[in-house]
Image (cartoon, rainbow, N blue to C red; front, top):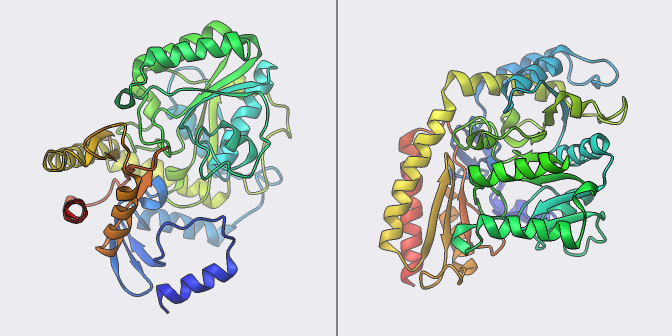
Length: 427
């Protein structure tokens, strides 16, 4: 079986709208490395888009899921509940930022978590409006697309979208958008588009994911908290990509000292098993009537036991500290590479192990080099390194290595990156 044969079958059987970045079909994977069906080895700096923070196929997670499979795989929590759902809710409630008592619900996908957070915010406030940020990504469902502040490829041809959704600019120092600019734009929305008394929630990613790995500062997060408090608006922190030790804290919101009213989680929550959730202040979470929240597969018992094991591994293995170590390593190597290629690498940034490198022409932040970014992703894969791109302008390489990856493997991947980029830049 070859990658080419499988790609031909994929083209014939799978809808065109499901984009695939690499035409390399996974055979098996272990920790920070995966192999394709032809036996080629790749260092994985993508981890399934920030899902495998605990590495591929951690035996502790595999064992927990196998044990659950021997008992039962599904009974639907809304029909015949099970203890692991409650235990995971207790763990997350205790770990969520802030001292207010919390409650949780579990679902299946990140987009589903976002949809339910919006439902809860509207139920709690009796208001319709939602404010999101340009460059943000919140999923591919209809409400998720409406909230997402990036048109291509997510919104093209799918409208109209739900109403009463508005966007403000996200503060990005490298692009000249200050916190004051964002806050002034938010005030302008209140004056020109929707009065604060009609806004149910403001939603943001503490570090934008698809938008380019730009982090909101503690002061900006605190300003949003103050605005929400002033006007009775719910603050929703979307921690779907940032959560579970990725940024050096269990949740990136912790850096700001802010307590969100609601928080969405998914991706790395269960080490590769599909589960998501909404964690929030108990009195807010209880605003929805019984039966208003849930889903057939929501809080799958397999996902719940995997999620419990992930929480245990993060603590036992010190993965928050390890994320900061990895971030320091990448920052040092990428900054050194930037010094060699100042006209190519415009910016290097990280919060823990959520790391980005922005590629530009002539060292100019206003000249994004999406072509070089795409070429680097492709060439790196040919050399044994899996990368992901992102950014509204398509010119950011995002690094999401497993937090369990040995330093030697990370260094090997960074060596491949440096050699590949230097070769491309020399052409």
